[in-house]
Image 1 (spheres, rainbow, N blue to C red):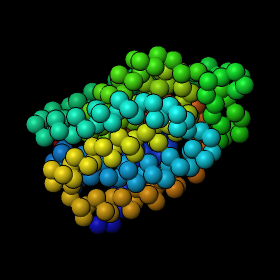
Image 2 (cartoon, rainbow, N blue to C red):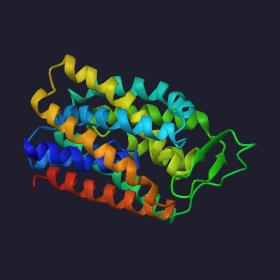
Image 3 (cartoon, rainbow, N blue to C red):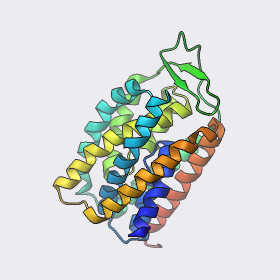
Length: 267
C-alpha cells in the first residue's frame, strides 16, 4: 500500500497549503487509478482530510493565521450540510457525483483566475474585526467579515457537497470567504484547513455507520496525509497571495478535467 501512503503525502501537502483538505487529489486518483467507486473514494477521502486538518489547523491557529471564530461560525451550517450530503450520496449515481464535483471546481477556478491575484483590502489591526499574521512577511493585517448570512448559506451547500464528493468543501469555502466575505486569501485557506476537519468528521461518521469506509485503504491514506500536512504547513510561508491563487486555480482545473473524463468513461 505504498501507493496509498504516497497519495496521502501529496494530498496532505496540497490540502494544507490551500485549505482544501486534499480531496481534489484523493477522488480522481482513488477512482481512476485504484478503481474505487465515487462513494468509496469519498469516504476514504474524508478520513484523509481529517488527518490533514488535525495538524494543519493547530499549526495555523498557533501562528495566528487561521480564525477559529470565523471557522466555528461558518461550521454551524457546514456540519448540517455535511450530514445531509452523506445520506444523499447513497441515492445518487457515481457519474452524477463526478459531474457535480467537476462543475464546482471549474466555477471556483474561474473566480480565482479572474481575481488576477488581487486580495481583500486589509485594515489597521487595532480597528479591524479580525486579524491574521502573514507567515511570509511576519506582518499583522486586519479585516472585517462581510455578507455573513449569504456566506453561511453557501457553507451549508459546501457541507453537503463535501460529503457527497469527499473533498472537504474547501474548494467552495475558500472562494466564499475570499471573494464574498472579505477574508484575505492566506487567512481564508488557513481557516478552511481548520473548518474542513469538522466538516469531514460529520460526513465520515455517516459513511462509517453505513459501512462505506474501506478501513485498510483509509489507514494508509491517513498516515500519508499527516506526513504531507507537516511538509505543507512548513512551506506555506514561501507563497504570496498572487502565487497561492494561481496555483490553487491550476489544481482545481486539473482535478476537474480528470473527473469529467472519468465520468464520461474515457479514463
